[in-house]
Length: 94
Image (cartoon, rainbow, N blue to C red):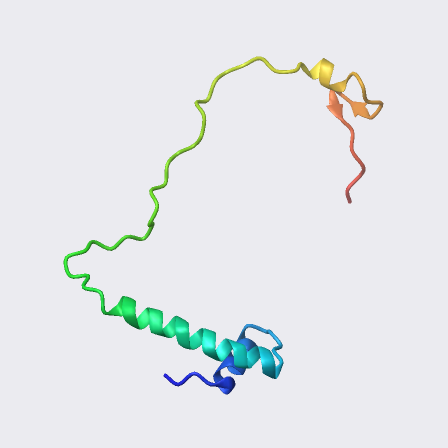
């Protein structure tokens, strides 16, 4: 694949980016380098390697669910003027 300024402008247009000529020229070299790296990667022997969709093992970082005491409904509502029937009263939504 030939990487030129027209290709860069096309990709930028798809991404809804506006590039000036200087920026497009800079991306030509960057894209060429990226494609060279991918060509090196594509030459790697992956025969017998199991596909991995998650390169880093995902661990559950959730804490254990413990039952603890919490604030009472009465204490939660004691500092508000806007309450009705033991609940916070909010603005009317129509």
